[in-house]
Length: 252
Image (tube, rainbow, N blue to C red; front, top):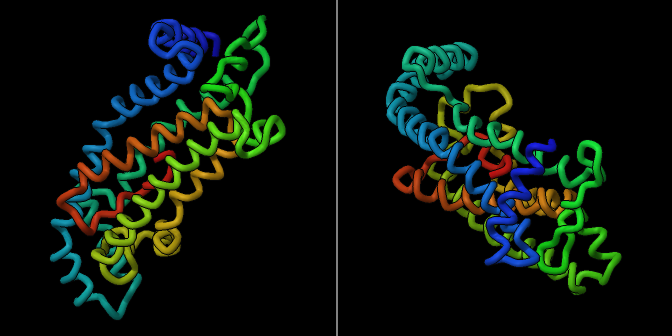
């Protein structure tokens, strides 16, 4: 934890001439961008996997005609096809899973009053008027929704709402293109996926709750990461209207 705190402080010192009192907040955004760059190869691999799954659709349609009256046999046949072609129906989860450690590092760093043997000075650093170690509830107590601290959160909520609306519309279009059930045929055969697909268009809006209840530093990570994801998916899946990446709502 001390080493990570040193990394954040070092980035903040580097950015201070440009961002002044919000340099630590800017360092978190930069750190998030660095994490997303590291994860980007996985995102590209996920997009390639989606293309491979799309190429299997004619063969899956044949299996559906052959085993349509036997759901268990159809599920087994589809999963065997994916295994034979070395294509995973849920490979898109990996980019989201690899981001979780970075998010939890920030969460714990800005939730603890002490780092090692000393006080955690990072808690007092701010994004404009809002301390990075505090939450939306603290901002409400300080000046209300439209107080100096509250307005910082209002700005974050607006960004999240815009990104969530963009993701909602794109996911609905993708699910409509995917046909009945809203999921590609391979994913439909995985137990539990059908239920997830029904709520997936709304999952991006859950990010609003995350931003409201975690320390502001962790909220910045979430907002930056989800915005990055929205742009990245729009580029990587621009030629796949029926693509619904698995794990699309988890930390972006």
